[in-house]
Length: 50
Image (cartoon, rainbow, N blue to C red):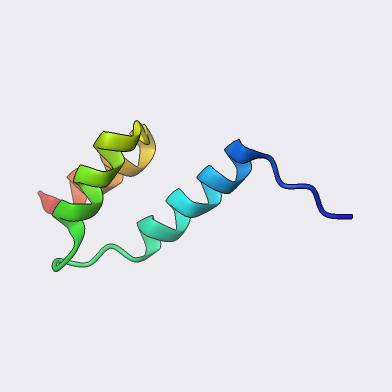
């Protein structure tokens, strides 16, 4: 039986979004990460914009 914890799902989702970063969505992903408190995703998206 596979058991997924909420923090595991959140981490996997953030990793997925990091891999989807593109000039057309980086500001939206950064904003989403900020609103959701996903610090690692926010940092990666912010650095992508620079």
